[in-house]
Image (cartoon, rainbow, N blue to C red; front, side, top):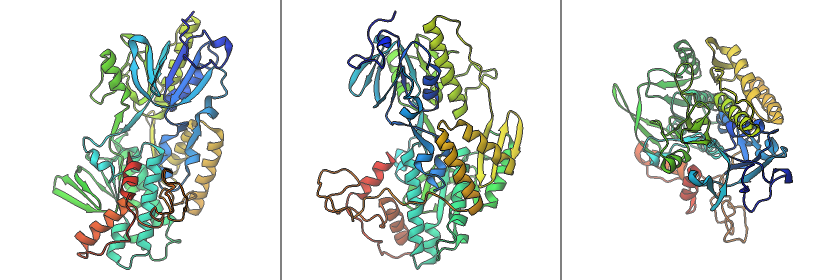
Length: 504
């Protein structure tokens, strides 16, 4: 029987679990939630910790960013997913340190003990050493990123609608997307659909032919993890949508309104009001903290190298799954890809394995089933590589839709997504085009210490005024492109900090 070092001051969910082994799962993504569910009938006490109180369906973030769906369609509260399990307790907070030798984590500035630890904290965005670009080019990893991108796209279009200068409108209708992987391709197709079709009836002054979307990648083809035939099909589909594809291009410098990249033909400068970053991925910081604590092996990307059961060689009670781990015990020797399918399978296996250890029954073996990869490019166009079977066009889109609905953890979200997809396909309109995220001058609250967006006395910038990022891009255009020195409408001090905070 396990020693009585359950979650210290906190009572167990049920009295029968007071002396049961304590399983701490850090991260409520695909892997963490599936590990919880796999332990539903095990005689263990589970504590699921996440700094968000919801599970995010990351593959559809680009649809939030382009107004196709809303935040509630891709995010489900963790307590709705696993809270009904009698042996699970969900806690909100961030694990800041690990103490493997004493089997403890530091969580919300306090130490808590565990018998089994599952690290499933996923990954973030990497700017390859150029963190200063983060403010200019929001990434696509969390819900706030997607909503910030949507706000920037809509604000640029709103400003273009009221600009009398045709060249300024072209500048405001130009978007650069860095990264030609699945997220970049999906974002490029969705932005093109948004700016060329979904808005052409609502905005009277805009000419959709002036929209310019440039997809930048340092390689020689898109979707390099897919077969070359599907890469070519993806490129053809995007070019039909009006997307310019720039290969062998590496971003060198970036400032508001301008991106400079190196190409075989020389440096290329693109002037654009909006830049979106989908190029780099970095594992969670807990991987390096674990390596510092127990000297475990990391791969070149910083992911934790794990054993066949996802454990650490010197600490079998610690498992690392999802984007945080480097798992090379596959038939091909290649590491598991950082996608929803492998993370879900790994989380389920680890949960079952821990359950078998506790019950002292035969332990399972992990066998990964590769479903393949896919990317959607247009309203009814996608490419899919399903275990060697290649599909594109409408059939690819149907397979993509079924796969994403199957992986969506909440039944309610499956229904709302299906309805919104059908609406978008039939009407070429978007269901979630709300422009939010800026403090409004109309909120007249007498609360000097109220956080953003509740500014005291209504002194914050109007939601209809350009934020710091767009304002800087418009000033760049005015000073560097048009030769004029007229400044757009002033916003109050503090908007720059608000914009930078949104990116962090």
